[in-house]
Image (cartoon, rainbow, N blue to C red; front, side):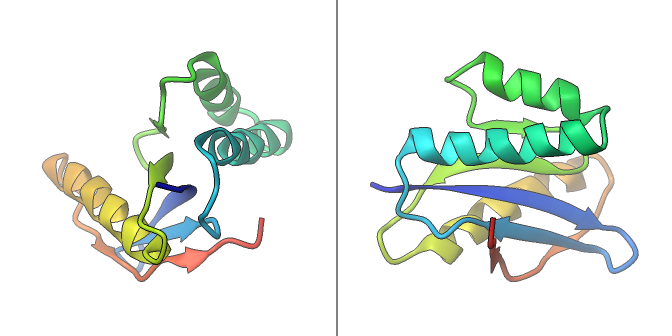
Length: 115
């Protein structure tokens, strides 16, 4: 199955979790490289906590998910014609984890990233 990458960002004022995913159809390595690029860019422009996140992501090829306890970045497998459905499924799982910690956000429909 093909792979994709996704960034999940909470917007607390609107109580929404916004997933943004890639176009899909990637190899796992390519999807991981996309996340590494996103985190490296954020580390260069923002610094902490992105420098640590970028290092964590790059330190283990086995890692498919990293979070700063608010936002999340991940790679996932998807069916050929289900890029957005796969993104939504993973965003819903992340929202469920946030709810366990008392943060109640609903998941917006995923957007496809232009990165």
